[in-house]
Length: 540
Image: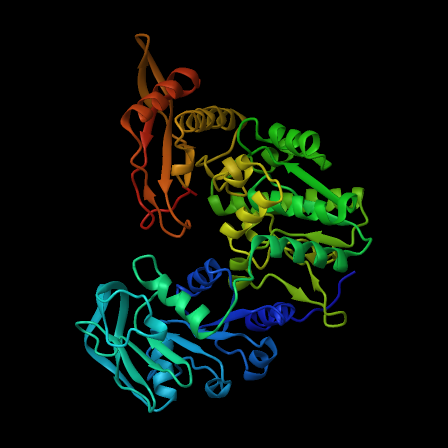
């Protein structure tokens, strides 16, 4: 039965979720469009203090409700004097809580409090040495001359009343400023990025010394709170979870099973695009070792038939998503009824996505779409569940910590990222049973050799790609005409950027020899040495 729903704004959706954190010490980051806003939140959480990213449009009433211990204004691509430049509610300066402005956030603070900002004679981009004029409060234990990361074309030319100079660089006279009495601070650099050597010390000073936070955001505290909240929300109702075998859905399954036991039903839909032996290993782990029942659905033929003749990568994804929805719908009706759908939504998805609705009558979040990062498209609007999303406060590294703390094995916790469409987007061109077999066999060899040498955890991802072309080769004095396999092995911190891994030549040699000799249909192995950008991690 279709029910009309109203879509909240991104900021409203986040704030609704934030209200549950009123009693927890927290730092709020107001986002002005910076590429680093999520990184600021992660850095604060590294100090074991909870943080959330909200829109700069967040009202003063909402901020008062949240009662944060401090606020950080992010950077952004605009100039504060541009027409239509984003601005926060000026009442923020009268809240009486510490505020730190970063780059654009600092310039906005200066402008709204009576100072001046103008285009700098010389912009400053990249590393710069920070010379400290006031080594107290914000800059306590930050070494004079330390490296900080700059990225600005505007500069503060006149500080507001009550502010003092805290630090400068060769090109920026006001690199850090502060009003100690009102606990208002601004920095022209980005302390959150890894290039800022003294950045974490500065953040810790703000969080602990200036905001007087306590380190209460711990894995143990999260697990305890999550289990209590799941039980309170679900009661005696049934919950459905689509299990993929990745760290997110596996951690979610463990957490839910810990909280509600047999009220949880896990469904694993095998669309035929997982790596060799993975479906069998997943079922054995969950059913035999962890005693968490999993409903296995073999839909391999169905997906292959739907993809016959399809070569466009976006069309592949669309078809896979559509078929997953249909299979999921059929299985939920067969196994149901269910009141709740569990999703492995993470905090970056909350910030970046608008894929959730709120029922205006009940206030419940309802599913009209399974997250695109699971590549299952959207559930039909007449298939209505209330959502339970215990991980939606967490970043990926926090999910791994939670998984490890509740007993998830390292092979899942440290599993390399694997795309939802699986091998279907690692075979360029049409997907066939023959090509799937070739790629599975080649990919297994890559993983075996990387694992055997203890290199698995050095790389972000290591996998094989099958190209839909054939080239001439020679085997046993015989001419061959077979497929090439591309090795894609990369290093990365977060998947946003990546570099090709400098794998030892002898390892590449063994992988190449094994693939050519053991995988029928392959006569050539090449290595992808493209970074991201300009390339992407996956080939499709």
